Image: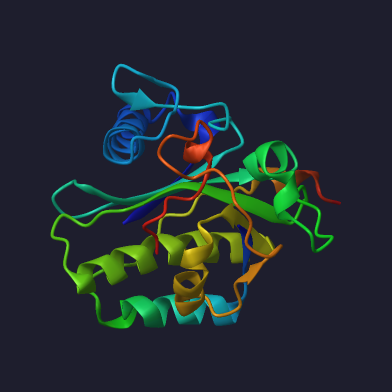
Length: 43
Length: 185
């Protein structure tokens, strides 16, 4: 089965709630690199 | 910390990628018996391109506890390549605003239900936040139909592109390795 996970603020909040990330020791900060290769080509 | 690295930087992070590819080999080839290209204990395939984006989560002891690979569907989509029949909704499997998630690993050192949830949330959260920050609208993947409910528990807006249909995923299937692993999330 092919599925899609919508990328929304609601999704982010739900994922955090699922993992109780607010209560976990140190899940952040994430170390993001400033790039989304495919989107470089989107006008 | 969840590290986010592009495939084009593989040479600069050779040790990290070796650890990741070895973990993938252990997870998918050894433990799940998927038929995947592997060499010297490393699992690497044609979707490990320069444009792939990797999320890798190490715990405080250096154990790789979570990982996932995102590929831009315009250039690298195993769903479009191998499972085009899995979309009946009219959604294009190659879309500039859709990335594809594969090779998902969630394996805390101590496998308690709480640790499993935290590790899953860390890697899926990092992936989703990264995608959000760049305007990606959906993450696409292939799963066993039975897992749809568990995905909805994590992200309630998750939806299927078509009703369930027989597909690769069994251990003996050569394409099994192209599906999201059956134990997540």
